[in-house]
Length: 111
Image 1 (cartoon, rainbow, N blue to C red):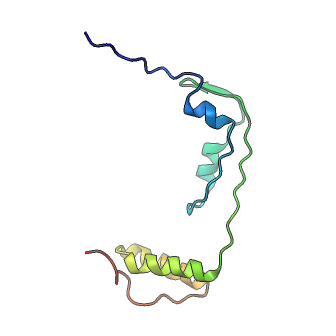
Image 2: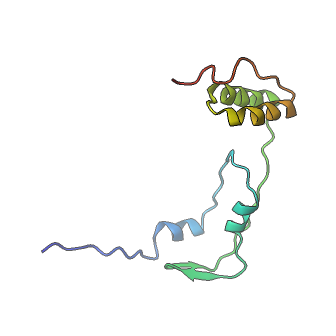
Image 3: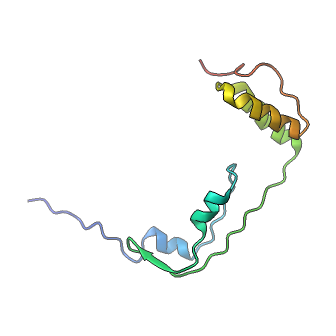
């Protein structure tokens, strides 16, 4: 007969440890209203064994970077783009920062 280990988490699991830590990261993802709604909770809760009684302050701020860095990223996306639906949004993003995309879309796409 095989023994099965319990899958119950203890009070020292990763969630508890992270509760007292500062979490900081950078992302390219824009934080819109949906993402904000997923983070907002007006009441403490207990669900699936997770007890949420601490409050957290979440601050979202854009990271200012030189236009050359943004242009480099845009050009890479343009070169590798294989979806014609993305061409106009990429061109618009380039216009917003005053950059003209070079070459044809998909010029460096892996085939």
